[in-house]
Image (cartoon, rainbow, N blue to C red; front, side, top):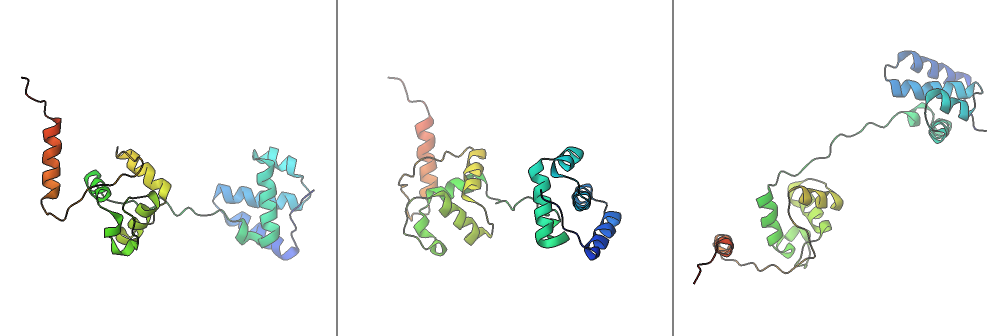
Length: 176
């Protein structure tokens, strides 16, 4: 059996914290520790507070190892920062070769999710995981397939010409 080990000094801190808190999650954790120190079994505490026995054991182990500081609920940092690139900007980026970006320090000619993640960190100042890059591209309806060599040109009119060719391909041909 595992029980919370509470001495006289920590019992006073525990009771003071129980009276002062207004957060229900924190109160529940404190109450579990208090009742455990009085001899309540894990199974009874789990049933009483409608939590898993593993959760009760986790609270007790954390308290025994580090006291109230370790037991406190972790604050979420909130929603992670997002990139503010539009779909067109993402597509333009994907049409460029990663080796053109000095900060990436790569000779690669095709983008990978990890390189895009590194690009966001180096150039946009946003830390975003490779899997989040994948979801972001799917949300923007940008197909992400096996890397293919993209033809680029230093010609400033290259983008305009590429778009014109794309529209010509989409137009129906004249019937003969």
